[in-house]
Image (tube, rainbow, N blue to C red; front, side, top):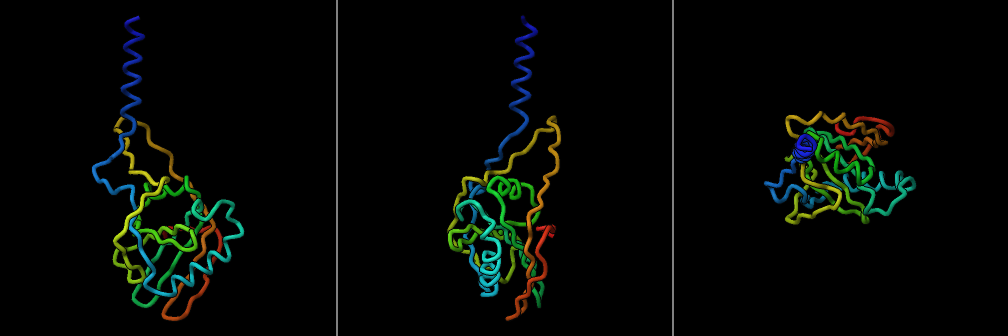
Length: 177
């Protein structure tokens, strides 16, 4: 009987130590509102939504869109993909590319990733919490490693410089390259 109780206590202690949520930063689950400083970004969003909207089965607010911006001095590359709310939280937690913020376009939440100094994005003062984005969970040293996340959405890749927007590719690709 004593061994059963001891095993139960050890099992509960092990379960409780598997994941610990880090809540030291109160804004880890809120996202700053951003806007497109460059009108070319709005054109790309419209092009993407016109092509992808027919495949979205949920309401716009339940279809997060990821936008990844890679800018150089003379040209910018933008990658766009529509994902599920379930995948969104996993991407935010696992990704090494910085989440700059979100913008709202026709009820679509567009989450913008890229370098914090990107000239195409203007940061606003407001922050919003999304029910499907949670603070990062840390594993204890004794818990098993999680399998890698497999994520293969249809990615739309566009480039633009000055007034010229070009569709480069549509298909399976690394969204965060």
